[in-house]
Length: 310
Image (cartoon, rainbow, N blue to C red; front, side):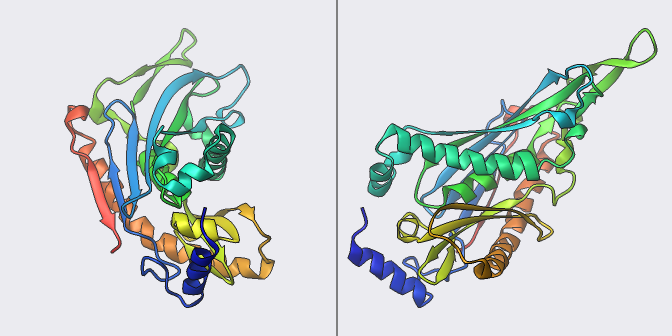
């Protein structure tokens, strides 16, 4: 638990624009991103914030049959699963205390999953029909598995960034249609060569997949990328989903007091400014991953990485 004195110290600092680690209110900690870490997945990424929060995401896809008369857009083709490592809640004394019970730990991972599913499975997926292989018969189902490794504040933004990069770095095997007896496409073959693999269709639009920016209200001000201590001092927390074109793709409130409607425009503007600085970092990792994707042996490809921030 945080003491009253510590809480007041954090609040006074935020009020004066000085946070415990020296950042201004709207700045992120150093962001470190690595892609293509798991050779057996279709895409993967690991994100760390500062020297603390650590998250890994893996993307896998499988062919699923579509029920007769059901289009791909009518079924959930992107599913997010979130799990915490055994040491995740022991990273700090505060985390160990906050999530000591199984119910509290389960509620935490469920909250992270709920936001990620809404951001990527609903607002970020775009046209799900693009995942069809044989219209009305077969489609790709995409699974995003997020593993929470260390909790030192703002795990949701790290998880969203890891999922974002893993989805954009993912490569699906190329398919070729197979004609049936009636000269209609009723089946397909998968091309075995790694160099024929292609990105997920819905990430061809760079603005399709947003990022999350969490803002913690401490007193009368909001801070981006809150640390564990700042989260425990927060009166409320907002998660804003912003796409690369600057559009608002989602707004989620995670507990705490009510937030006045008049404060939301400033919150969205702050989130947009933070996201604008993050997208180039992630774009560079994805570009590097794409350049390495043509290697004959996927397991021997070097992973792509980047650091952003001070």
